Amino acid sequence: MIEVRPITILGMPKPFRGHVGTIQSNAITSWTMLRPRPEIYLFGEEEGVAEIAAELRISHLHDIARNEFGTPLLDDLLRRAREFVQTPLLCYVNSDIILLQEFVDAVSAIHVQFPKFLGVAHRLNIELTERLDFVASGEMRLRREILPYGTPGNPTAIDVFVFPPDCYQQVPPLAIGRAWFDQWLIKDARRQRIPVVDMTQVTRAIHQAFSPRSGRRARLALESRHSANVGVARETWLTAGNTAPIGGKGQANKALSPAARGQGEGRDLHS
Image 1 (cartoon, rainbow, N blue to C red):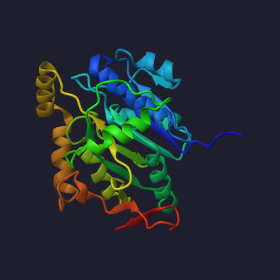
Image 2: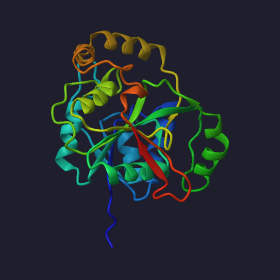
Image 3: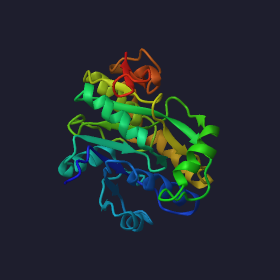
């Protein structure tokens, strides 16, 4: 019997060096443990990407358009994904984010009610310095010893986006992982009158914290002032409505929450 895979996950890892390599290995391995197992595509030629793709038996695509700072661009990522995706849903997730089974369960519950939607989740920040063995007891240790001490992230930091492949047809050349690209995805869904569903009460984006090196912080500061994201951000803010803090929880117009025991799928959607 052929397993039906409901979702394709897209990842754009940084080079696998030191602590960043460890937390990205944890994150991407966690994606492979989801059931049904999603299709997973890693993009880019950064150090270690080919090796982790081979180790975990997932797909690896090399070329991706980049801006003048070398940062991958969202429009090319989504264009490429539409060329090969065969699942009803796409997910872009930052490559330091651990996903657990409740993520798939939440997405499935939403998709039953909304054929077209954007699902988002806020961060839960954790400290993790070693690689977890998800095949053995790594997930159990994560749940028992680490997640209870996690702290909520900034509400404007969104690291998980789930949507149908045809959701975004006209995408500006936004730098992935930089300011405003995540807020643009939410604002444009609202512009299209696509339900934006906050999944945070049911499933969080488990973010493994790390500190960028000083040289990288300086480069990020320069890019934040001069990349195309800045102009798009201003246009989006002025034209798409600003009734709530951009990118914040107020931008979702639906929320997924645990239902009372014994009711349906165990998930409730409410406005």
